[in-house]
Image (tube, rainbow over all chains, first blue to last red):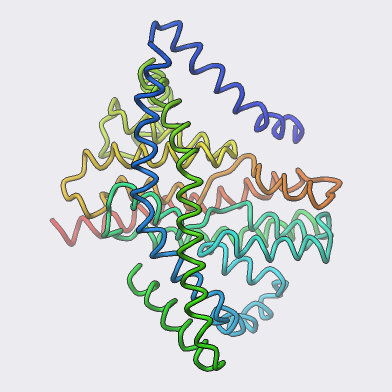
Length: 178
Length: 196
């Protein structure tokens, strides 16, 4: 089952790339012209995201690289210890919604020190894999269409991240420990 | 909210740097952050150009309409304000499927395209519509059947069982997505009450 699912992901992309043009050609769509028409929109869209992403990533970099993030992390340590959550995964959980590459660095170091098949390795992988970088998604998606007032979208995303983090810990403990 | 988070990150970063006597850290970090952001966008160009081209073929062939017809019950439950045959539906559903199968590269262009279509239905051009918030909720909670990137990283680290995280990841994202959808509904209703 697991191999089947993993294979599915690997063959999905080539399958889509064959299926779409083939189906379209069958329906007498001028596929090459269609492709060019759609592809034209890619460049301006990517460029329009730049100001939004620069604004956000500058703030994230200042927060992360000056050590401010490290400072705030220590306040969470007692909470985490109270719930018997391994402290190694704390920075991953906190960083994940803000900076995907930032949390990935902590995942990589956990995999290196404890091994990918250890409990911590599996837990770190699950936390990293189970959510997207909320701040990035909000910035890119809203930035692409020029939305400035994001309403409650960020709030919902961050709550979902917290739930995903807690769920990862509970599920991994249940599945991989004793 | 985003304004406060932004201000908080910058102010606390500057204070942290000043307290360490290393104000120069702020300048370096800011420039690096800006550089990273542009690099990400440049990287997005190739992905967007390719996938938006591909998706146009799918649209012209009527595949997107087919997809939204197939998944209409789910779609109309999640996005009651979007007409079932609107092109936005097709893009939303392709975005969700791409996320589910771990095709992160494909998911972003489809999500952006869905946003553009939703923007056409939006009455205020700089304010997010409820449907846009739902789309974001689904994307940030990231329902995932195959965490492809993470499996790849585990393989690089010599894991003997790289796919062991598929089960827990799927379950965790089911929890997160359920909460995201419920909260989205809750805030949407609250928003409606305050405005109408």
